[in-house]
Amino acid sequence: MARTLLGALLNKTSAVAAQTPVPFASRAQSNSGGLFGSGRTAEGQMRAMSAVGTLFAIVDRTANATALVDWKLCRKAKSGRKEDRVEVTAHAALDLWTRPNPFMPRQEFVETQQQHFDLTGEAWWVIRRHPSANIPLELWPVRPDRMTPQPDRDRFLKGYVYTSPDGEQIPLELDEVIQLRRPNPMDPYRELSPVLSILPDLDTSRYAAEWSRAFFVNSAQPGGILQFDQRLSDDEFDEIRDRWNEQHKGVGNAHRVAILEQGQWVDRTISQRDMQFVELRGATADRVREAYGISKTAIGDFEDINRASALAAKSWFAEQQTVPRLERIKGALNNELLPLFGTTAHGLEFDYEPPTPPDPEVEAAQLTARANAAKALGETGLWDADDILSAVGLPEMRRAPALAPAVSERPVAAMWSDTVAGLLGEDVENAQRWVVVTAQDDNVCEPCADNASATYKNRAQAYEDYPGGSGYVHCLGEQHGNSCRCKVVKRGRKGEGSE
Image (tube, rainbow, N blue to C red):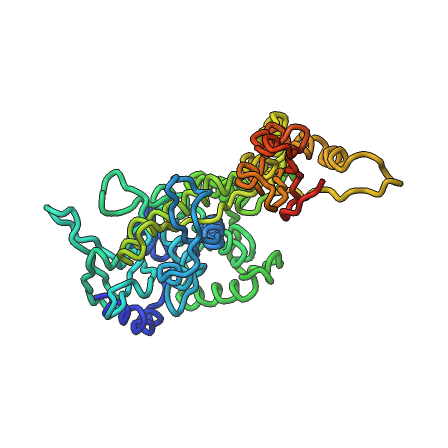
């Protein structure tokens, strides 16, 4: 069925192009005689994007922000923690999501489906399967007004029907379609669109724009009446009308002096200022933003804003607008698309890179907390420096090189401690690993041979077995009159020993 639908999608292009788009205002008038509340169909909701500037800005901004986020495929960890997951770089599902179909990269696919969702409250993905392997081969975004769920009394839902531009109806199975929708409290099968809540406001904005346009086209004046005492013949009426339009109609003829051979001009009392169309359109824009929960800064209005508030607005937009949209897509990928790849997708999950920008103040507070935690662990003398850094989430730090005696006679450990300004707050000697050095010859005893090359996490532990740094406490050499020749030395980053 999906191959049939693909043919409808690709081969009906000419039929779609042949359809003349109906302007939003004209459509509203034809549907309901120009009354508010028109365009309630999904098609009308999508057309509204190109009719009202504020709505266009909102949908375009949210769709772009959602489409620009990077994705990755991961294998779940047994611990259940995200940081323990392993990224998967080669899989058919990853290839499909990177290039959903031959004509759309992922960014365009996500942007298209997000436009559908933000305007109508739902987005539809149609799956084309591989003819032999029966795995998803392509993903296509489909207009919501052309998809119809098929309810079932026993199974809740038995499938879908796609209606092509020429009216052909194509049945689709449940595993051929993925639907993303904003739940509708009145309909468990369809969506709830924000556009429905602001239809009167959208119509008002459109009509106000048309009125303003007509105001300038008609001499940039509110209009008036030519009044005559006697009835005019048809020829006289046409002549006066044509002369008036020729001399006074249009912006270029505004404010020209009118010369009337007969009759008198009666000015209208209503002006554009009285109508307050600027304020009206501003109020309409506020209503549209309220429906989508969008602030002015999110659509480029940066009046009375500083850098701090701009960063806060950017973070807010990512958390409140982009992340919920990404989570909905993530749920569709993991719960509906990945299972179609069978056992090869077991234990895998899609995830997105967080779109929330970093907060410098939060990062600084986290770094301080981690440094304090590292210092507390280092002061115990029980843990290795690398283990401490890893445990608290700090990057590995290189050992500071020894300075020439002419510059400083202080130990390297002290210089390193000063350099990091107490980040770890520990002596390097207590933080480095220690390794046992044993003379391997015929005189070495069995305990010393067994403990050769053993390592200790810090000097305190090493000195428990080798007091003062030499002489193994379990050495048997003294029983035969020989002193222990074993010692412990500090081991550098690459494993080399040092006295």
